[in-house]
Image 1 (cartoon, rainbow, N blue to C red):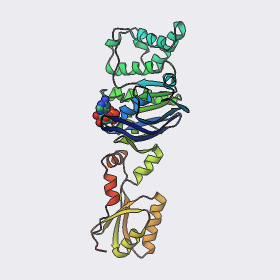
Image 2: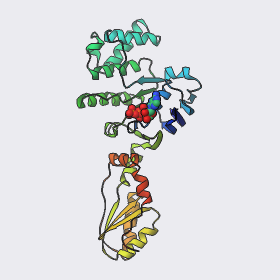
Image 3: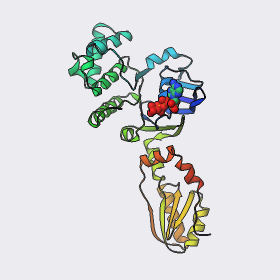
Image 4: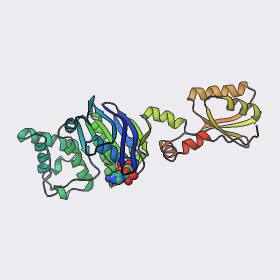
Length: 320
Ligand code: ATP
């Protein structure tokens, strides 16, 4: 559906995007997450045709939209992180105005507007003035407006910013329903907790680069290995350390009294095999546990470059 390769953007001397790659599969609800200033809005502005990149490609359904910007309008629905003007219109007039911009008029336009307002839970407000709506309602109206031309990809930039927790939850439910009805959606946020429950796929951006991306299952695997395995040794510490140092899936080791903290990148099955290996090497193991990780901890680790520190460190206080 969407394929971005090697996207580059500089503002003066500042590299806002540094070779960003991104893939969004059809039908997914893709969470685009990154700390403030990571490059989310810049990427979205390029995807929506509001900004020209300095390099790279953006394809939607196989069409190079940078070479054919006209094709973007039909394919993308965009909800920016601010609400536009036209406050002095009624909700129905606002929707019909945008419907007319998309070539829809008369009964067809009215039906389409009504269906969309129903989908976003605003049908009871059809005769209200836009400026009388709450922030959450305006956000829903922005969503309905972005869907008028039935785009194949809906893009939302920080849509829940400034909403209270209840309104945020309701908005997320609406987004989920739209995705279940078959729409491909990209939603950005600097809060991972905002998206981790909602999305089927996640992409984490930092410093203008995608640093981790995949389905929630793939990310969950990553989470599993984000915490160290703690092995408590009853007897034969030297044999344990020898085996661990030679193990290809062990990234780092640190020893604290009888505990060995092991950065181990293997699956659950490989963990079991590691334990069996230790026992077979004559090590008496008293404890073998991996704390459950969280998506938050992976995010913090990746966006603060903790990972490089962890991979490079090889603390060993044993003297071996
Ligand atoms: P936030 O979550 O704070 O909105 P973001 O991930 O959307 O951040 P961008 O708005 O894309 O990040 O900005 C990326 C970097 O580029 C930031 O350091 C920002 O200061 C810089 N930047 C963005 N727009 C401009 C501009 N028009 N001129 C100069 N620098 C810019």
